[in-house]
Length: 113
Image 1 (cartoon, rainbow, N blue to C red):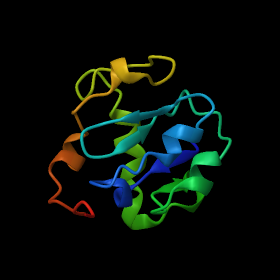
Image 2: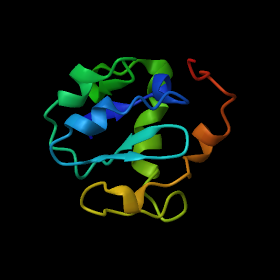
Image 3: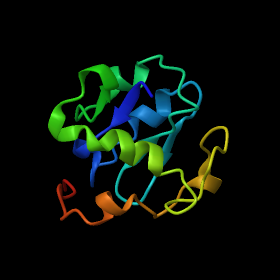
């Protein structure tokens, strides 16, 4: 895994990252986006475009955000979203599901009017 979406995405889901991803490896959950670790080609475009700095390279992730590596990986498991490895995001595999640790978070960001 090279790029990880972390807590600043929760309840924000700006979506610029999904627009620029050349392989559509960023999937939409209920409260945040998740990068599929096996589909990402490590181009880093998402990192450069994220307006809330929610995406980080795994070699630079801070200790307090380290658990988001497992959150992104486990999101695709059968017992979380059940998406597996769809081979690229499209509207048919958008889900309201989130990783249990994300779903349990209090509302972190409120929508801007």
